[in-house]
Structure formats: structure tokens, C-alpha cells
Length: 345
Image (cartoon, rainbow, N blue to C red; front, side, top):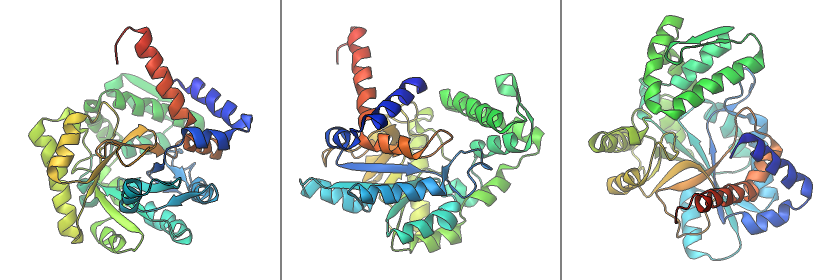
């Protein structure tokens, strides 16, 4: 859906006074929430993650609205065995950011909220090609940014110009994940070290070992290098998933049963990756596709999530997404498009 249509749905849904009705009709029995960084100073990081204030609000709102925040394992068990009206929320964090411990964990502890963290090997070993961190750093510290591979130069002395420029380049990469590799020379010219950024922003092995022993924490896999699996051949994709699982299990001395596809959209993962996740021995795999879980019969290897954060997020937007109406509207528009194009379902 175009942003203007999303904004219209959000505005109308919130102003209608019918949000409780929308939740009863459209919300699933479970929602898997997706977070990345939880930032104390959201603005200084160009609003790329989730502010600590919105994060804490989301947890309190879930409880107030009757959602029970549970672990992934508990959620799956309840959906399979309890047909009752209870709704469950699962909190997930991608990539293993240090602020998930320094900022988010105290909030999670205050709310006694279990959570899942999906960690790529390269974040811990500092080998991750974290191009998104490199881009953010460039736009943070420079008032003019040249992206050679795009053939574009961004004049961005003002905050809003930095945010818009950054997200334009991120969107360009997401159109073709092979483009991420073309940014390496740009970072080198700018004197930006991805290794140093990895050290600054991601947990290290010792920190993850400590976190894994926390009673609220569970750890899942997220590949070795955060690669878009669909861009790899089968042996390489399998190795990305299996080697990451093996590494985490050896490091933590725990079973790693859950997985998150890097990027997680339809361009980055599909049925082939679902089969690989199952073959390797994972119990679930989550995507970044927006939606909620209706029942225990959902495809456990293509689970949708509800993203929270980014430059345009707010309490109102979060509440509307949790109502399910935005996903329902997107689905109806998709079905209308298929019907009008003459393609059979």
C-alpha cells in the first residue's frame, strides 16, 4: 500500500472510535512484534530504530488491552491447545543490538515480558557487512553524501533531509539485495569502518552468553552474514542457516530452535527457504511480512510479524497495526488487484 493510503487508514481508524470493534474482528489470536534497535536518543540515530518511549508504551498498551505477553514456545503451545479467546503477543528483536540489553532489557524486566533475540554470527564476530549502519553513519556526520553506485549525491544539512536521503538509499538496496555489496567502496572512501560500527552497536559473544542465561530471554538464528537467502544457491543458503545455528548452540550451550529470515520480505525468502529451515531442524521461522497469526495451524516457517519503529511510527500507528485493520485492508486491495487483472487465485 502507498504511504498516503496507509496514513488515511490509520487516521480514519483512530478517529472512528471503533478500534475495539476492529480488534475483535480483524486482530489475530497472536501477534509477533518485531523490533531492531531500542534507542534512548531516537533522533541522533536518524529515527532508524524504536524509541525507548514507544517501546515501553507498546508493552503497557498490550497488557492494558488484554494481550498476554508470552514466550515463543508458550505462544505456539497455547495456540495449538487452547481454543479460547485469549490473545498472545511475542516480542522479537533482530540482529543482536547492544541497546536491546542496555535500554530494552530494564523495560522488559519491569514488565516481566519474555522475548526472543535473533542473532547473526557476523554481528558477534564483527565480520557483518552492516551496510545499513554504514549508510546511517554517513548521513549522520556529513551534510553531503555521494552514493557512487546510485549515481546520486544528497545535499542534506538538515535533519529531515538526512532521514529522507538515508531511507531513499535503503529502499534502493531493498529493491535488489545484491546492491549492498556495491556500497563497500563508498564506505572506504568516506573512512567508515563497518567493523568499528559492529563493535559499537552489536553485542559481543560474552554479552550474548550472559543474556542467554536471563530467565526472560530466548535466542534464535539469523544466518551467518545476514544474507538475503533467495539470492544464494541452495548449498550456500543452507550453510548460512545451519552454520549459524551450530555456532550459536556451541557458544551458548543451548538448543536454537527458532529462526528469522534476514530482510524477510517476499524477495528475500520463499518456499525454498521455508523447506531449508525445516530441513535444518528449526521449529519456526519468522518473516518481516506484516500480519498476525490466526491459529495454531499457521505455517510455522513463514510467520508474519508486526513491525514497530522507524521514522514515521507513533503510538497511534502502533495501535492501528495491532487492530489488524491495516493488514486486512492490504489483503483486500491485493485480492482486488488479482481479480481485476484476471488472474485466478
